[in-house]
Amino acid sequence: MNIFRKFDYSQSVFKSEQVFAADFMPDELVHRETEMNNLASALSPLVKGARAPSIILHGPSGTGKTTMVKHILRQLKEATNRVHCVHINCMEQGYRYSVLTSILSSLGYQVSRRGRSADEIIAYMVEMLKKEKKTLVAGLDDIDLLVSQEKNAMLYDFLRMRENFGIDAVAIALTNKEDFIMGLDRRIRSSLLQSVINVNPYTPAQLRDILAERAKIGFAPGACEEDAIGLCAGFAAKNGGDARLGINMLWLAGKEADKQESGKVLVSHAETVKGNSLSILRSEREQNLSKEEKIVLEAIRKAGQIQSGILYSKLDLNERSVRNYLAKLEELGFVNSIQINSKDGNTRIFRPSNGRA
Image (cartoon, rainbow, N blue to C red):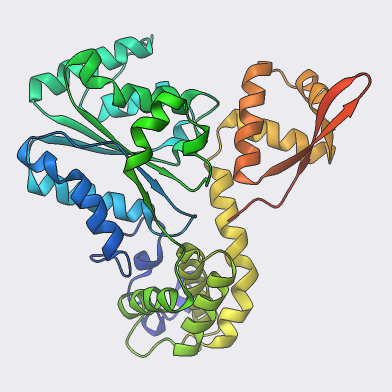
């Protein structure tokens, strides 16, 4: 007998599991109407062929920034053929050069294996945008996770595109780092200070509404207790108001309900999976690290704690690159460090941490 026949798929609590996936795009964004309107208002000149400012979209993780920008870019493309829109995950790319090549690829140009300089990449981008008579609009997700000064260079590319090349380019820079804009170069900061849109954490009531909407379209009718939704929303609210955490927990509760063949998602199922929901989000973050970043993280975990100088000597990697990897790992919460001052000089000691969801 085929082993899969023992599972009764007809009794699943799910109508569509895809609804709970990280990349699912709901038709409407619940409780983000004001922020969506502010973003659309800032970009509205593009519809008439006029110039629009680059924007900083700031808010904690799980507050809907990525979904907002994807919605806005999709609707902007529907409203006008004068724009080329692209969304880039800077955490996955890591470097300005990688972001630029991704933008160029979205324009239909594949960079050769021998590679090109960043200036050459920009020249090709400009050539193609001029040919198509379009303004580049790029959502730069997690821009604060570009290494070192790369974020300054990346934003400078956009802010000086008209001055240097005679075309317009708009960056929508997404960040959850509170002091991100103050850490930018003064000239870049002054250009962006008037174009910051803040996204506040969801309230417990808002999280409940969001999860109730996902449950409505993701579960079979009547297959989820309201109190189970409330528990997931409350757990997400206590962990920074991260909607992704609540959605993930609700999905895991559904899987637990199917496992127990209960036919309905109960509070007890949500309680069972509470810890796993945090672990899965951390694991997803870690999977997105580069090979080199994983090497550095594993070295720190293996050592338990390690001085920076000793770490550099143990790794077959460029020291400057390792410094950049460490900064990113600390920003993501995978490691923490303390400064040690002594008569022999200063050093940092790195330790592994649990990481943030």
